Amino acid sequence: MQTPIRTLLPQARILLVKLSSFGDVLHGLPTLEALRDAYPLAHITWLVEAAYAPLLSGHPALDEVWVAPRLRPAEFFSGSNPATLRRLVQQLRTRPFDLVVDVQGLLKSAVWVALARSPRKVGYDRTRELSYLALTERVPPFDPEAHAVRRYLNLAHYLGAPPTLPRFRLGLDAAVDISALIPGEADRPLVVLHPGARWASKLWPPASWASLSEWFHGHGFQVAVTGSAADRELVAAITAHCRGPLLNLAGRTSLAQLAGILRKARLAVTTDTGAMHLAASLGTPVTALFGPTAPWRTGPFGDGHQVVRLGLSCSPCFKRQCPTPRCLNDLSPEMVEAACEKILSVRPIS
Image (cartoon, rainbow, N blue to C red; front, side, top):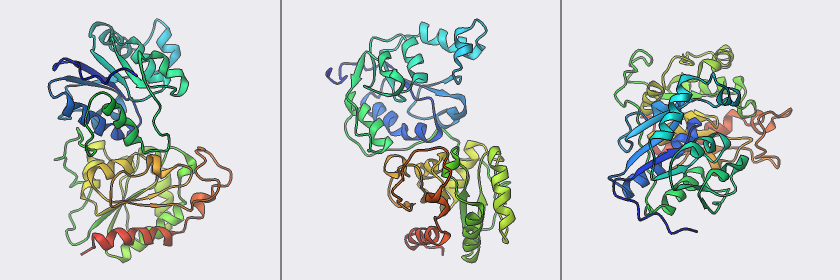
């Protein structure tokens, strides 16, 4: 292994490549902070897909955010590739870096790493899709069962950053106005339910979400349901099962507004999805529902959260689809309520 990179010039140019997804970009924030602490005068750029750029734009530890289009090989190798793609290729070829760090470790990140001009391209060895072939310097694989935050931070430590507590700061506007979305009912604490997920196997039944909502209503909470536009049908199904009022915010919030709502909430209940990581990074306690994935790898990071899972012998299976998704279908609202009560016993309702 090469000696950790303590020989960088104080004003070295560093490129971090972490394109997606929502939660993974958030998991990379402590790595950015650690590198900034180690190299306070460096010029640090982050390459990210457009959907997640708002998480980074204006971040105090970043000098630049470069936006990468989602790669479509047919466009990339044709003469008709989009203007954003051509612009990024030109940037990577004309603006050299002293160090490129592939935090992603996939083919789609390796393409940009390979195109970047740099004498040192660092990342983990033996990553998926042969992405490590684009590297000039390969870090031995880290414990695959460790949390993603720890895995990414290990790269910063390898590069000379001293061990520190993980820090999460966002580029999102903390002063965003959410008054039009959340009625100002100061006497009723807010809870956020985020039922959506990209994998069908991560979903909890709508009737269970409705039962949980009724439980919160009975404890005096104002209940907001968040999600993307793609979650509207799911939220409508939850609303159909629910007798009490729900603030249906699915498809109605920007990332900054979602952060503002989660920051205001006393508690968030989520599936294993990006909103879970956003709430945790903001310091909002989370009750997280896990089935096919491993909370020790990608659960809400930090103290004060609760993970609810049945721990079946087949879990975690990491399957996006399952013909018999017992791991979440059999998870009772009472189990989730008990986990929420543990959080509220530390942070009481009144």
